[in-house]
Length: 330
Image 1: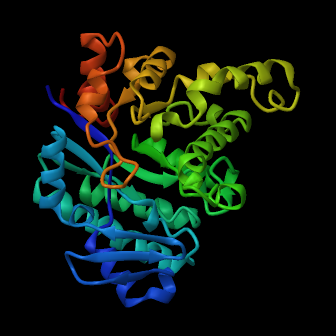
Image 2 (image 1 turned 60 degrees about the horizontal axis):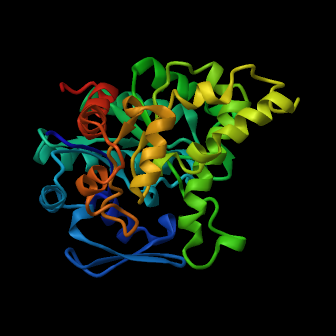
């Protein structure tokens, strides 16, 4: 059975070298040499193992995990939403060219997702059209928030509309917005902050009416959709009883919720079972979050352990849903 991984990160060597050469611009230190790079930004420090930037190492990891095709997306460390327009566009191009270089090694197994300089919508549209035209990318990854701004804000609507027009998938990934204050300990910025950021983003897209304008936008949510699959009933109830949640949109949260796609990265087969019950296997795909420490090392075993998994659900999650989402042959 073919298995397609839709949540698999890279930090291409093009941007690694740029960060080495301009540490002040990128507020990042890259220590060591190729093969033993270390990424340092504030309190964040981790080994940039070869899988982040070497296509052959990525393929070895995929083989080990039973993955046939991976959609590789820039790690959120490369979003750089604080840069000015010139640097932002040049940086996004560096990252995306690096992703394309990696996919070019094995285009039969590696597919690319782009990053966009979302803080500058005109530049974001320019880069979106370039990666579609030059590389045939079918997806982009963007933060669940754009710096301190919400994706639901009207100024980002032209980018989202252009994505919809081009039928490009949006992979929404947290960018550690919730990692300060009470969450700045015990890795809670990731454990709680990441799923919380996804939940906040979707709530604001729903209640602001943004999704009423973007009914054909295909959006994939990381980490099993954050807290949404468990709390969507609360959204639904609030929309029914509160004037502020229904002031802009009459669309029901539960209906909008079922229009999203979700990776199966829940870290518990019972949680994946709940997700399948809530949205159906036609909306759930594999995601490993490789090679980060919160990734899934045994995605096939995780899926096999989902209670009462049917043959159709297994095939949908393994490849059919992703193939339909990204326009792959299945």
